[in-house]
Amino acid sequence: KQLVVVMIVCRWNMAQSSVHSVSNRNLCTIFVEHCRRFPELKGATDDSEEAYADLGIEQEENCLARAQFYWDMCSNTYIQPIVVRFNPTGRHTSYPDSILVEQIAKHHESYVASYAREHSRSSVDDMLREMGLSLTTVRFILPASVPIPEAEDLRPPSRGKCWTRVLMCHLVPHFSGTGDDVDDAYENGGVGENETACLGRARFFWELCGADGFQQAETTYLPTGARSVFPSDEEVFPHRLAPGCDSNKHFHHWL
Image (tube, rainbow, N blue to C red; front, side):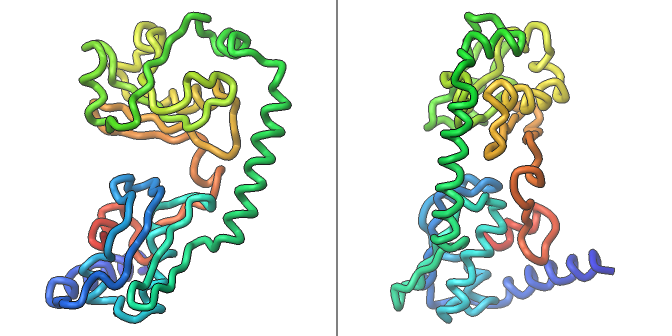
């Protein structure tokens, strides 16, 4: 019964948005520095036409409440807040609030420093050996300006299929970033032809980089667009979806 209600609410909202019009816009600016689910939202933008039509965004409190909505929708961590400004008054808010974010950020910095000290005796060579890699192993790191869908063009024909993103690879720093898998994985692990083999590499790179409990490794199998994350969202932080709609397809209605 709950699922039926959710579907009805989502469809009703979509239907309503098609019969309303909005003349007064640019009142509510959303500032998105990180959006895990929809990276294309990064930047500053006015709220959606549907939000103006259906949610009364011309009221300050309704505009500011959108910070939590976008944070939920992006499934961000607590150190990736969303900021919203109501332009007529200049008032702004962030979600989560800045005090909580600062506290967690300090805890994270302390954790990373402690983590580095704990593993200070492990060299890059030690870690590569432990994970069964040659000391000469090279990983192609994608330039920040190039999106993954265009990355295959930068690699030889037999490569560029299996990409893993690790923001900070503590124990093998030159592996940090979004990179193609290593030659051994293509030649002996089948990551270029087998989706399952590729997606399993998220855990491999997470462990290789030191199993940092504050971050995830995210792998994309480019031929199908399939994606895996390790550890799971539930293990790293609460997995959050947009209120009222339980499917990714509904998010774009509100963008």
